[in-house]
Length: 95
Image (cartoon, rainbow, N blue to C red):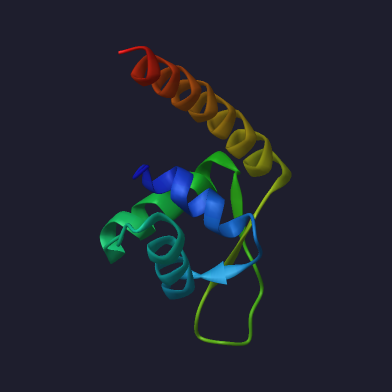
């Protein structure tokens, strides 16, 4: 699982985070290290689609939060992945 958008949405599903915190979280749960260009490209796309939003902050770091539309999208993507995983595992058992 290395789709940057899916990883960012999954990270934000547990709460607001700024970019570096997302990179650390993603590396921890997915064992994938996103570079800054990849991370911020995904953040820009997700924000344009309305799946994440900026959160006001007094800090120099910019936190983001997942939106209701982002949660719905994440649920759809994870459901699709779940189906692929179940079929793949079943086929491996039968191979």
